[in-house]
Length: 283
Ligand SMILES: [Zn+2]
Image (tube, rainbow, N blue to C red; front, side, top):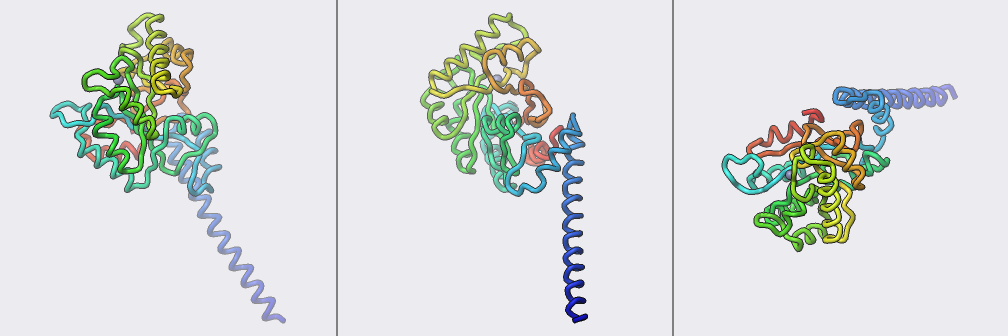
């Protein structure tokens, strides 16, 4: 009898030991996550409590900050850093796949940041500004090869122009899960034009894209990353849900939805710099 009781005590003791260790491990894990977030956050208390709530999720997480990559053209042109050589672009997409990133749409990002939606463990958003034709001809097949989708911030007056995408190309991207979003009619510096022009640039481009694609256009990127408080207010007034700057950093829950930062990708940045920008929210 004593032996049986002894065995039971031993089992209970061992179980407590195991539970104790895993409990410790869990706490350490969550505290290390919140510390990482603390380093990169403007509002540490909000972030750390959110982190604690999400450490048990294995495949999905509440969004804190998500890297939103932005490109322009994907073609080879020596000395022009906004044109990403196709081989470098392909290497970056391969890197993302190899490291387990999953591309998410701007709509998924919006839901996750502001509506309590969930995202994959390693979310990434891929965006292109202006609507260059090589986005369709060159980037699209590469993005597709790696199982990703992307978004284009399209200047509406450029549609069908030389070097830019046509309606049929935009519709094909749209049918393949790409988002075609707002980037004004004429790509002005919005802080430099009058209020009526700002509103026309925002509204007319949104309507043109919505009519041409048969989908709602909810997201916007400021041309040249140029904005002020009035411009941001006009973007909101036009009915956009979220707007992106060209400021360095990840799209962060603690930033308001009219000033979301992005990760600039440029020719010859190299994979090390690309990787670094994916590891540091305030790179
Ligand atoms: Zn632009």
